Structures are given as structure tokens and as C-alpha cells.
Image (cartoon, rainbow, N blue to C red; front, top):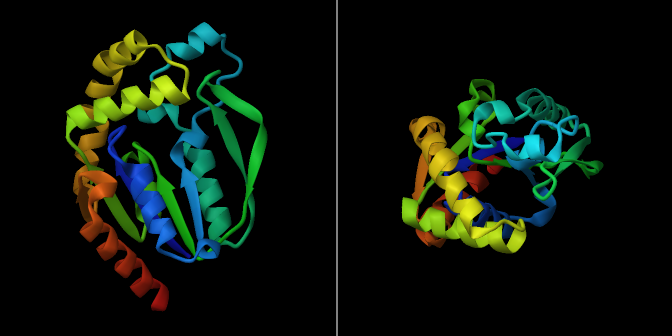
Length: 203
């Protein structure tokens, strides 16, 4: 199994990069594991308390479960991946059955903040996009997909997203094997990545 880690700031275009890589490879060979599915289960807290959690801090991620699932897939075992709701800020009672495949892509803003996870990655990619563009994308996504209000998104960006990006996410760019500027619009970088993956598969 080839494990590919894709990190970068919120709204940087990580998901677009993942999709374009996935679409360039045989679908039956690719599994995508989103870091966001592994937010810690805070269902014991009230909704108001869950709203106040800093979801851009590494402590918000259940890395123990994420790592155990990656290792299980490497051992050709299927896993029950959690399903996280951005509306309720908690895990669903349901789950997604994920089967091991030849290529595993792990995507999320905090992927490279965990040393053990970095070591498991055969290829590490950091998607780098201008801060203004990231904010605009985040605003559009949270309004249309996550039921947020404009003031709430901007307030969270100023008080949480921006400082957490500077403290935890941007510094992990140094661990990347490849930096992809302007996200999924960078066709040359995507083509190079796909070639790298195919070469590793061939070996």
C-alpha cells in the first residue's frame, strides 16, 4: 500500500487536489481518508460547549483512532470510519466501511502535525494558497454546506483559523516532499504527482 498525505490550510484546495489525483488513477485502487472524519467524539458535551471547541488545534483530532485505522488498512483489514457532522459538531451513530486498496490518500489541515502519521506517509504534499483566497473559499463553503452565518465564519477565522494556521499548519510545509501552489488549478503539479504515484505502484 502507498500512503499519500495531503495537508494545507483551510480552503487551500486540498480536496480538489485529492479529487484530481483520484480521477487520474483507477478508482478501484484509491481510498481517501479525510482527517475531518476523526474529530474527537464530544457528544457528551452540550451543543454550546461543542461550538466553542478549537477544531483547528491538533488536540481536536483523534490521532490514536486515525493511526490504528491506517495500520489496519495496511494489514489488509477493513475499518469502520467515523462520520462527523459539522452541523451538530459531533460524530454520527453511523459509520462508513472502508476497504484496503493499493493507494491510501489521507487529507486534512493537521495531517503533518503528527510525527507518527508523517512517518507512515510515502509521499507528503502541502497545498499552498494565498490567505485571501483561502478565506473566500472557506466563507463560501461554510455558508452553503455547513449552515454557518457570515459573522460566525469571519469571527472564527480571525480568532481561531488564522492564528492556528500560523502556529500549527503553515510550519508543517517543511515536511512536504512537494509543495503545490494555487491548489487544484496547478495542472503541472498534479501531473507530476500522478506520475510519482504510478512510478511507486510500478515498483
